[in-house]
Length: 428
Ligand code: GDP
Ligand code: IMO
Ligand code: MG
Image (cartoon, rainbow, N blue to C red; front, top):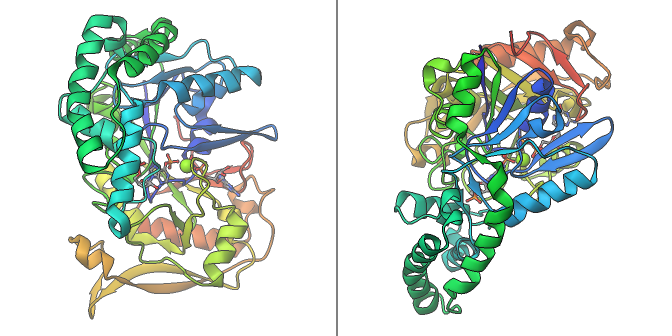
């Protein structure tokens, strides 16, 4: 009765959507457990491209029930738009289940996100501007609006008014923005609540009963280890726990029910937004990785910062999440280099570090120490077995496996569902 967690091991956009979709046909539930529509997960099925922001990637697998867990923050306008677009493309979204405890992103959260970023100037985080941080802040401050609040108008109005009493002071007095009326928020939320109501169930019970019956539950992470508010490159992080523990708190499924934790790692490294990134390439090499890999954000369209694979970054994620497997994506993008540098240690002011340094300051000052591996020139996008890969590509994978300390069970050789080399089954 497996519970399987998919976690990003770098700074997001590793290909979690593709890896999740890979298993979709064999899982009974596919659950988002953290983040919101800051996520952008791309799937390519039969040549058709889909971008998911709030819907679990399992929505494309007809036998899997898609679930949005309590740990997710939901922008209902975005959710319904996503459902409408997918339904228009022939995807059945009628089985979506949503937790009554999930928090709602409102327009004042989006506004707060944007004004605080603008106000921060050079100190900005580079958020997606989707209201994620302010919504999680309200949750922790015990003044959030939850899905269940949408079904009682009076109660909802009281909560929105209480939140706006505070927000309006800040918006008007500090940021010189217009006062937001409770009525406009409440009306929109009530309308959305009506549409949402049939999807709302006790997702904790649903998932635990499913596991009791031997069903397979896949927990689809958004963001990544190094964007985690506890474990990431704070303060340049998101405001939730995308790490494996977040799958338990974000769904109400206990840790003893988790059998596999699959870390998704890109064969090189990318990052969107601000924050330290030791292997970042500011030259034409980075530009080539960006162009070859199509490294532009699915959510905001921003160019992603690109650099070589950083083994310390992924090893740290493997340790803190207890990865059982790694799914390595985009190996095909590395075809065509004579030599491929891989970061195996850092130099921090003259001291060598073989593991991620303890402090953020040291991490920000780290200079990568590279090991140069032989590259390959063949197009590998048609490979389906490990032995089909050129020997140098096999050696690259084996060396990363050693450095991360976790077996690499799947290798992405293209964006398509079928463009995968499976080394070990991810479910059994
Ligand atoms: P996610 O946020 O982790 O789901 O990743 P994104 O969808 O934001 O970014 C990953 C990008 O790489 C998407 O455009 C995917 O279609 C693409 N992709 C995923 N795996 C592979 C792969 O193995 N090879 C190639 N060439 N593209 C891939
Ligand atoms: P997926 O699921 C890459 C980054 C933002 C910013 C920081 C905080 O597609 O991998 P936020 O809006 O969350 O407050 O922004 O986190 N970020 C992501 N980067 N992929 C994502 O999601 C991200 N979600 C947030 O760029 O640096
Ligand atoms: Mg993404």
